[in-house]
Length: 103
Image (cartoon, rainbow, N blue to C red; front, side):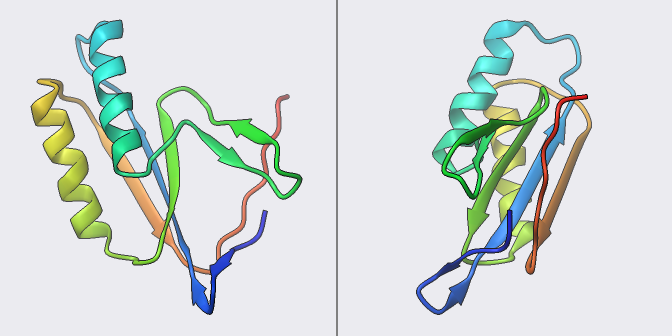
């Protein structure tokens, strides 16, 4: 997978992984639904057009801006709205690429 552009604009890839503490399946579902609303999904579309499932509790999305602080604030608001807590790791990058495998 290589970085895509929308028109003449390079997109940025954001990748989020987290671990909820003392959470049940409803908590994970709440977070996943709200992350989807801001463009973070548990899958990415590969070059072939096929969807690739990401590892558990990993979400990714493409954005036109590399404003990681604004995205992080949205993720924090989602955790508060879903009344969950736990460690979060977010990366954003331009000139990105990815590979997926199942070993």
